[in-house]
Amino acid sequence: AKQDGRNIHRFFETAMDAQIQQRREMELDLRTAFAAEQFHLHYQPLYGLGQGQVECFEALIRWQHPERGNIPPGDFIPVAEETGLISAIGSWVLKQACREASSWPSDVRVAVNISPVQFRTRTLVLDVLAALGTSGLPASRLEIEITEGVLLQDTEATLTILEELRSLGVRIVMDDFGTGYSSLSYLQKFRFDKVKIDRAFVQNIHEGEDKRAVVRAVTSLCASLGIQTTAEGVETAAQLEALRREGCSQVQGFFIGRPMQAADVLQLLDSCDRP
Ligand code: C2E
Ligand code: CA
Ligand code: CA
Ligand code: CA
Image (cartoon, helix red, strand yellow):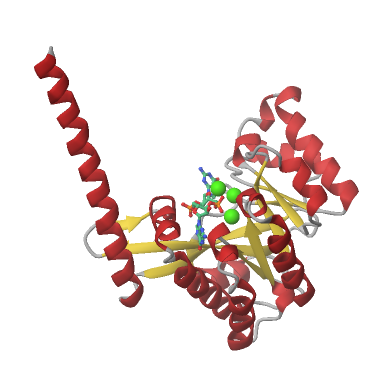
């Protein structure tokens, strides 16, 4: 039995070593990826139910690894955050998204995801100013998406940064709403322009009254506060219809459009009915 225990112990040690090794490798790869221009952005449309047109595209980072192929952001963003590389990556994302969006029609916005770590380093406002300045994109066409992780840390400093961005004319969006512990209290702390209702609440919305309750409560609360709402992860026509009935401002998801290459954005906008 003692021998078994030792083997099990060794097994876990080896597994842990492998995990640490993998993270180290990814960190090294991330550093070279940046220099080798292996990152690019995909864009997913946000469709406005009021006007019946695409109003915005969310920029989603993609990493094309030379050996491992496409590595999803969920796998490498946490490593980038732990190593501090997210600052450089995040400022590149802002620049690239603003640059690409500057060639879109003037009524179409771009949304950029911002990591909580980018708030800690205090360079976010400068990064945003630089991205807007070099691209010529008006601030009113930039949305930044933050999760409640941002408001969990050093709230006063964070609120100051958010107010600064807001005073530039940038729109501030609360992402993944409803998944955290105290989402509702954040609506009082900061006046968001838009709230994105997490996919978890959208998934079975068409199944019945009780499944609809959260979306209904959030959309009516936001409407009374003058905050727009986007439903995330819309995959079926039934979900879309239910969300329309609940009065959501925007929808986003595979049913509307998958994340696409920058080159396909203009093509999609051209093929849509635009006034
Ligand atoms: P997110 O901000 O919540 O982005 C939405 C994610 O849901 C995207 O995954 C998108 O491809 C996926 N999605 C969209 N519609 C549907 C749908 O109908 N069904 C399903 N099942 N999924 C859908 P992606 O691109 O893998 O990104 C994952 C997360 O990585 C993002 O979640 C965001 O937190 C983070 N991320 C992506 N790009 C960036 C970035 O440039 N900077 C930072 N800091 N984080 C990023
Ligand atoms: Ca997002
Ligand atoms: Ca989200
Ligand atoms: Ca998410």
